Image 1: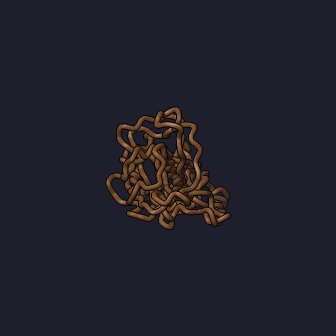
Image 2: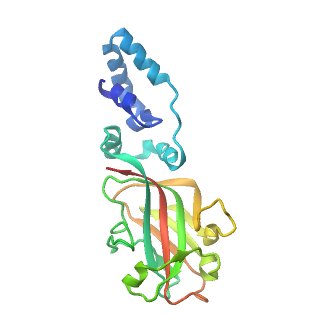
Image 3: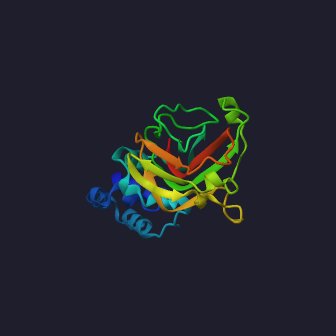
Length: 241
């Protein structure tokens, strides 16, 4: 089908107009409709007016942010070169006796079992809508990276130094979550919530090539194992090829 009309008709998204930009496609859309024969035009208008089955979960949350996406990502989504998929950006770091633990740093290199992004940035053409966050703790047999890779993780519920600390999430120096208690991740008495998971009431979009900062602040190291390690996972929907 023609141009903008074809992109809207073939779109898998609930609100393709937001993705394409209504102001940009309205004139083109009307032009495409006028070029159709009466029967095809009637079918097209019927499909355009038909109510879509709404998206669910973080995908639905992501679609609300279509207007904030860079034009290059919008174009690739509408053309089918990118699509939306579940994704978790994660990082595992040892505490190493520090009261401030930076989970994403510019010198980080992607390495399976430790983190899945490099330089604290999303890969090119990836935008991530952070819908929730995992925070888990474990104890490695040593500070060696191979030992950290096989550490088992559990909740912070019974680790007072971690449970009573705080965290904040930034992207491009802007606060996405500000100085929030780690007790948000206490889940042992909630059978319907994944362990160590905090669902954001206000999901936030992170663009590619933007610095991600996730800092954990501890008031004390008392009771914390010398080989303690922390897992952080930013959970949501991302654009992927």
